[in-house]
Image (cartoon, rainbow, N blue to C red):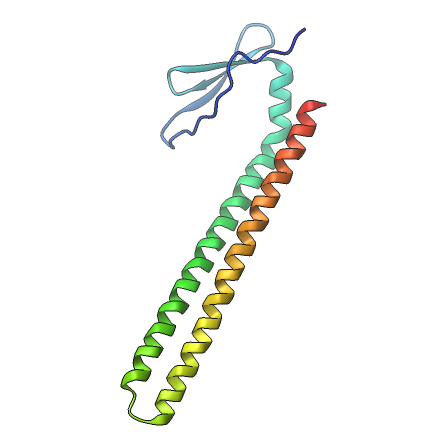
Length: 145
């Protein structure tokens, strides 16, 4: 039997779109997406999907958790930059040399914290892209064999 894909496409589904899997005559099944898309899958496709479901769900949860951490780190960097700016502004109106020095030192500390948080965001984003590329290559290797 010759391997053939009738159509190649990527589709993003809204949360309210229904997805179902229904048995069919013979050893095939139909993947139903919404009320207009139907994909016929043979038994070997179903077995392949079944073997991948647990890892895929786990991977999606890990990616979501990593994305949440990136958001938190990005917000932490933003808050640190804001704190540094407030400390610098305070230093301009401070009444004593000790207040000025303290405010400027706090501004420097907040700047360092912002830079570190930003560096971590960038490193984490790079690591996520690298992991995604490796996963794509592994999938291509497994699919090709």
